[in-house]
Image (cartoon, one colour):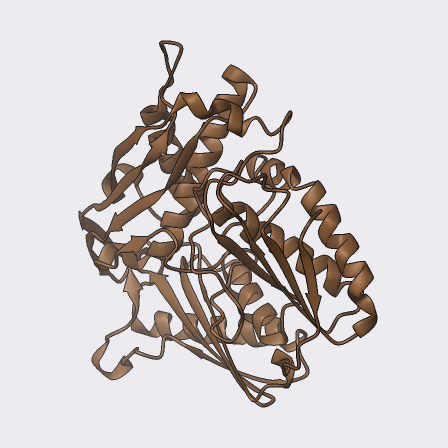
Length: 389
């Protein structure tokens, strides 16, 4: 019998609260780079394990550290002076029945490929020094991770949190960064973008920090015109996303009179000594939301078989979204595990619903469905069909 508790607390929904803050660190932010590398290494190991043994073996690659380097950006060019240092650590199964698994090579290749595919303005060998110190995991635990046959047992007493639907501000912040790093089409704008949103009543203010790429900007006048063009594009993009008033501010620390602007050689602040770590940025839904229920545990890089810090954060999001689609004004889901117990039987599944009180039965059905099909989360992670930051 699954322990599912559905409650209808008297809480003011986020859209009706006076103040809301939302942040997203973009793909090129040092923290996001660490998240992306950690998850890429995990997926690469999953693919290798499945190819060799037909199942995912024990690993956790959620320990990635980035130490900022040094660069000299200048209008029309620049150079790297000191490479970024990236340390890959964690645990993985490196030996099975005397057969060595090339974990180090797989991890470094995955990290290199992620950086090349994410940062469009780098020469990889000059940009980053990648070091690998992934320790030996236990092959004795392989049976725990065979999600095709048995329900894995929880690796820890922990919890995951999710909510739905996204508010107007959350959607705008999330999609603005994705637009800049997607369909914007401005080569002058680097991948290190941070979007901070403030809603005060019906007034929204977006503060955007965008690392500009020096090689594509010949002088200060061109820089200023590029910021104006970006501002215009973002105004047009956000105008159709909400009926609320939206004001946009870009690179507010710029000082044009003294020619002091946010110019980078590579498109990321990692070149200027900005450090990064896994789990220090976006939560599993891609946002940082101080007005929402959240888990502070990192999601990226953890094994997708039985690590609650990954599975329950992603699972709770799916449950919340499905319940919200049934008409709930707002849904909060909290799943708590107990170490050694099957992951499809959490110690508690707490569902808070704001709005329609007739949704209790449907909420239980949806929660039961996802718990009975919890290994879908594993499949989504292995196949790269879910984002973790």
